[in-house]
Image (cartoon, rainbow, N blue to C red; front, side, top):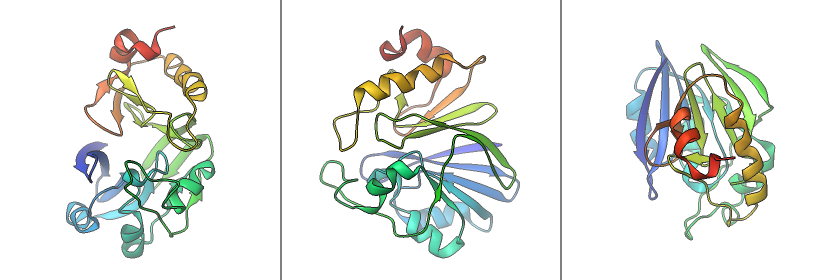
Length: 199
């Protein structure tokens, strides 16, 4: 599986494009839909995974859905953020989706040639999730390089986020961690250096 990162939108969100042959999967598509159309090209978009419902992780979803009619996955606890432009706003910037979504459940998720585990990690938002693939974790705004997501926005909870972070101690091998913003890191690096992961 090939992973490409595109920094998109007004707050520099990491939009991820995963490729397996001619099939692609998008995680947190922000920014201009036309740009993502160009990136996808003639390949088949088999699905869109959302780590949470904030405006900067969903902006391009409706446009992509209208073109590709692919499944869009979001935890049901973040539906209110994704569909209410005021609830999901950050820094006064708003966006929302109107397309149908599939409610995420914890456990294995298969989309075309892609296979991952969905893990519920509430705290940054009520319905935040991470996606664990064979060699990498897409952590959304749950975990960043050297930091964690903010919890002072609607539905946020520092107590829940601290509980959710325990999941990173449960893995038995190293992973590349692809966060919602800024640089990628590794699980082992965060376990040894990230203040919020120290027990």
